[in-house]
Amino acid sequence: MRVRGRRQEGACPVCGDLSKRVHSRYQRWVKDLPVQGRRVVVVLEARKFFCDEPGCSRRIFCERFPEVVEAYARRTLRLEEIVTAMGLLVSANLASRLSRLLGFPTSGRTLLRCAHRYEPPQTEAMMIGVDDFAFRRGHQYGTLIIDLATRRPIEVLNERSVSSLRAFLAAHPEVEAVCRDRDPRYAEAIRWEAPTATVVLDRWHLIRNFVDAFERFVAQHHRAWLNTLREHQASSIALSERVGTDGGGDGDWVDALITELSPKQRERRRANQQRRQQRYNDIRDLHDKGFNRAAIAQRLQLDRDTVASYLQRGGPPTDTRSRRAPTLLDPYLPHLAKRWQEGCRNAARLHREIQQQGYTGSVRTVMRRVRAWRKHAPAATPPPPAPALPSPRTLAWALLQEPPLTDSLDALLTLAPDAATAAGLARAGLTALRHQDLDAWNAWQDAVAASDVTQLKRFLRGLQNDRDAVTNAFLTTLSNGPTEGHVHRIKLIKRTMYGRASFHLLRNKILYHHG
Image 1: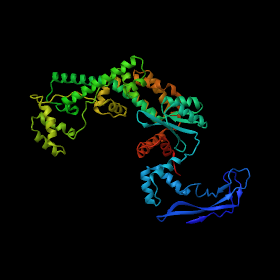
Image 2: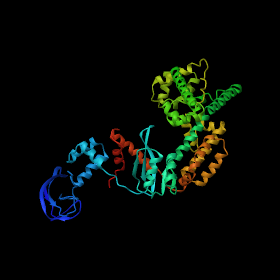
Image 3: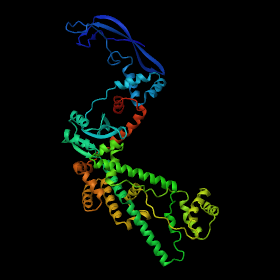
Image 4: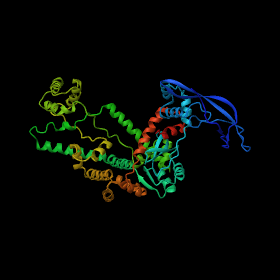
C-alpha cells in the first residue's frame, strides 16, 4: 500500500512550531499486520519541512505519524505491539516460528530486541504482597512485589535484602498494607520505610512453620516412642506365653509384619549414619570456635537450615525409615498366616489359594515372604516382628489429622502420653489458624506455654517480633497466595529462557501483562 499524509503543515519536534514550507519528500517502508495471510508493506510518502523559528536548533524536520508508526520505526505500532508481546510471552525461537505461521516472519534477535525495549508501566499500589523467588535455588534469590488489588506484579528486585525493599518502599509512600512471609529482612525494611503500614503475616507460611515445629518435636521423640511400642509388645508376648492360649490370636502379628533389612541395606544405613555424624562433628567444631550459622553453611557448603537443624537436635539425625512400602501381598497376609499355622508350607499352593481371592502378584513374591518364616522353624508360628513407626514427617502429618486414627496410631497415643498431649495441642493450633479464630489462637498460646512441648514454645517465641502481623493475619483476608502463584509462573518463564538471559529481560517478562 502506498500512502501519504493529508496535513498541509507539520509541527517541529523540537520547538513545536508549524511550518508549510516543504523541503523535500522521501519514502518509508513500514511493515504492517498481514491480510488473509499475505504480507503487507506500507510505502509511506513523508515530507521534510523547513523550521522557520529563528531560535530553534532544528532547521529541517521530517513529517511524523505518531498514531501509526514511531520515528525511525520499521513496523507499525500495532505490529510492534504484537511482536513485543510474542517476545515476552514465549521464547524467542518459538516466537520466531509462530511469526512465520502468522504471516509476519521475524527473527529471534529482533524479538529479543523488542522484548528488551519494553518499558513496564509505573503503577501505584496501596496493598502489596512481598515474597522471594530463586534465581538459583539455595544460592541467589530475588524479590517479587505484586499489587494485591489487581493481583499483578508491579516490581521485581534483583536481590533479597533490606536495602532493595527499603528503596522500593521509599519510592512508593502510598503503600498502606503489606502481606509478607516471616523473612526478617522484609520485616526490617518495612519497619524503616513504612512504619504506619498494616503488616499481615501470610497464613500459609505461618501454618508451614507451625507444622515444621511439630515435625521437629516428632523427630526428637520418634525413637523413644518406638522403644515404648516394642517394650509393650515384649511384655504382651511374655504375658501370653505365661497364660497360654488355645491357638487364639495366631495371626495377630501379621498386621505389623515388615521385611527385615538385607546386609547391604544395613551397611548402607550404617555408612549414611557415619557421614551424618561426621557432618555434625564439623558443624559443632566450627560453632564452638565462634562461627555463626551463615559462616558454617558457607564453609561446609550446606544450607543454613541444615546447620540450624543439626545444632537444634544436639546430634545427627537418625534414619528411621523402617517400615516397608505397601505391596500387593499385604491384604492376603492373614490368610497366609492362617494356612501356615495349619501346617501348609508349600508356597506354590499358597499362591494358588490367594490367586482365587484376587491376588495378581507372582509366586516368587509369596516364596520370598514365606522364606523369612522358614527361618524360625521348627516353631509352628513365625515370631512377631518388632513394631515400626512411619518416618517423622509422615507420623507428624498423621497425628495432625482429625480422628478416627489408625490402630497403630491409637496404640501410640495410648502408650505415650506426651505424644497424645502434643498431638492434641498441634491439632488445636492448626484448627485455629485454618479458621482464623483469634480467641482460640490466644487460648492455644496459653496452653502451649503451660505444656512441655519445647518446639512449639520455641515457635511461639519466634513470633514475638511479629505479634501484630500475626494478629492481622487473623483479622484480615489479605493473603500472599497471588504472590506465590506468580512465583510459580516465574519458574515457567525461567525455563523458557534456558537460564541464558539477563535480569532485565526476566523482569520485563514477569511484569508484562496484556489487556
